[in-house]
Each structure stands twice: as structure tokens, then as C-alpha cells.
Image 1 (tube, rainbow, N blue to C red):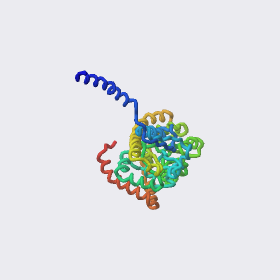
Image 2 (cartoon, one colour):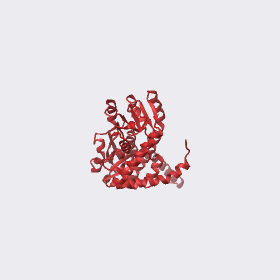
Image 3 (tube, rainbow, N blue to C red):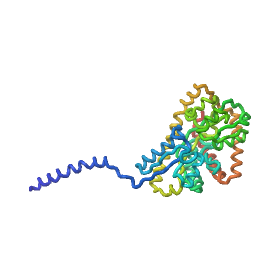
Image 4 (cartoon, rainbow, N blue to C red):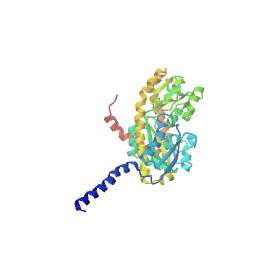
Length: 356
């Protein structure tokens, strides 16, 4: 056979094989090196806007970024563990993970409340800046590791409303004697001014307010409160949310389980959580204006706290914080870190941002 003909035949035989390679690459995907399956107990129902939907979303995001290798199954509150017992279930390894906010663990580790929300505390950008670059994260991880848990900030929401009441609250004295469902450190402030704070899970609030078991409540941002139907049973709605100017949500993982992951697997979970923070903030900010209008159209009166009431609540918070610092070294350490960062940040906040 002549050399030129041989070369042509050789090329012709190669072309079909070369042409099929891209098609094969499109249809075949490498299987995950190993499959990881976790159970995650949530303190919020999956249907609850922002608070619950962020937890549900993180399961699909982790699956996507890991190529399906990490499967986190969301369980509704109470299915695997009662909401307020999720901390212990994760710590002991009864379940691998939990979706919550660390303010729910006030009775176990008071300092963790500072990683949830802080009365008269930072806005979302400042809170994140302290956590990521001001010393918050090492303290957060150190505290959780002492309880065999690894915590990751995995969601965030904008300012909350600060209360639904059947009767109007005009002065600080009007809080006295009232039973109010209130979250976290804000509840301690109300206790300081004479109220009787109650911590109820979200699913118990509507009935308690309807039956008069409580006189008032706060829960979340207007879009979430509206979904809970609180506008049906209370006609006075108060702002601003002095107790929660921003709120962290967390993915807590049994520490042994976390340490069993590769660095790549850990990074995939952390990346999904970072994206979830952005999602929670952007969705949270986008939904509130329309929700406020619907609530007002339903006949609810929207109130803004007077300067006098806010000043009284702030003075009460300063006393509560001082007492907790004096009685809890762990709380004192976190508080010192946060207040030091905020004092330095204030120069930037005052100069860098427009004032209304």
C-alpha cells in the first residue's frame, strides 16, 4: 500500500473515536468517592419562612456543591429530638447535626447567646465583621468544642420586630407584670423592667397568645410573623427590634463527626453556609415592606417605640450585661471581644455611612 493511502486510512479510523469522546464525557460523571449521610434535627419547621426555609435550603446546597456525596436529611422539630434538646442530641452523637440559633442554649451555655443576637447590638455587616475578623469565630468554636460540637454560622436575618401586644404599651411601666414570650438576652431585659418573659417554641405562640396565657410576644421579622397569623390576635405591633438588630443561625455538628470529614468536605459545607447567609439576608430584606403593608391593611397599628422607652430598655440591658459579665467568665470573654471591636468600629460606622 502506498504511504499516502495508508496515512489517509489511519486518519479515517481515528476520527470516529475522537468524535465520540465529548459525548461520553457529557453522559458519564464520576461517582462520589464516598457517601456521607447525616440526620439534622431542626428547631424550626421547614415551612417557616426564612428561619425554617434556610435550614431546608442548606441540605440541597450541600448536596449540590459536594456532587451528591454529602446527604443531610432535614427532620422537623420534635421528630428526632424536642427543639430545646437538640444541643444535647448533637453533643452526645445521637444525631449528627442540628439547625438552630445558639440563643436557644441559654440555659446550658449563657455565652452562646452572644452568637445569636444582642440587645442594642450590631447590624448584620458589623456582626459578621466581628465574627469573621474581630475574634468572634475562635471563641465560638472554642465554646462549642468544649461540648463536643462544631458550630458554623449558616444563616442570617435582618432586624426583627419587637413585639405584638393586645394592649398598647406607652411607657416602661406598662411592661410590669406582663407575661411576654421573648427570646434570648432580650427576655432578661424585660425581666429587669418588671415583665415575666416566657420562652416558647414557635409552634406554641399563636395558641398561647390567643388564649391569654401570654400578654404579648415577639418572634421574627414581619414576613414571618404574618405567616404565623399573629395579626389575627394582636393589634399593636412595635418597632424597632431593639433586642435583635440581626440574628445568626447555625448548623451544629457533632465534633467527632465533623473531624471525620476531609478538608474538602468541610470546605464544601462551609461554602454552602456562606452562601446561605447571603440568601437569608437578601430574601429577608426584600420581603418586609410588602408584609408590613399587608399587616397594616389588616387593621394592625404599627408603633415606633418612644425615645424614653428605648432609653429605659437600653439602661436595663447595660445592667443585665454587667451582671452577666460579673458572674460568668466565659460570657465576659466574649462580651469583651465584641465590645472592643464595636468601639473601634464605631469610628468607621459614624463616618462611612449616611445618616437618615
